[in-house]
Length: 242
Image (cartoon, rainbow, N blue to C red; front, top):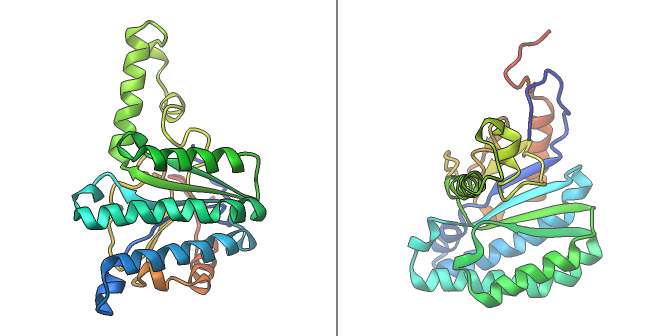
């Protein structure tokens, strides 16, 4: 969890990305929306492969929100199939590249087979450190905080936690991201300029970058440019320049 300080590294060690625009990318070309999602999955592979060479050690990707269930049944089922295929096909490649993969979000609504695949690749890559890749599936920031609050309420009711001892750190330890550092930089593609319930607690002091580029067109070169701009920002975390 970030703390207020006047000094901060100029490298974005943890980059979080709202991967938006897959459906629009396909629609603009007269193709079904799922074609865009499949193209977006290919872009994930490329970005993940190159991220460590850009100094990124942690990457969190927003793949499916708690609100995305409102989409058509066809699109939701198609997305779940893409997630399952991605995990199956990329497990060995992730391990070979030194990528640790894990997931955040409420898994209870996901199909049992997908949950097993998620747990399997987490176990397979748990010892790896070149890149820590976190994928948010059925994730919503308010939902995450609510689940953490419920967990604390149960501990208090059972006499295992003193409410007077509640701190930011105590709540953070009950979030899905309990052992993941806060993001330095949050990027949203597709031209939208809202955060869409993504990491509201963790990104309190993150820098933000919004790009018009649709996710399937988001290139490593554009990511490098964003990282260069980030390195020129002065992050004071509420303080003032000495």
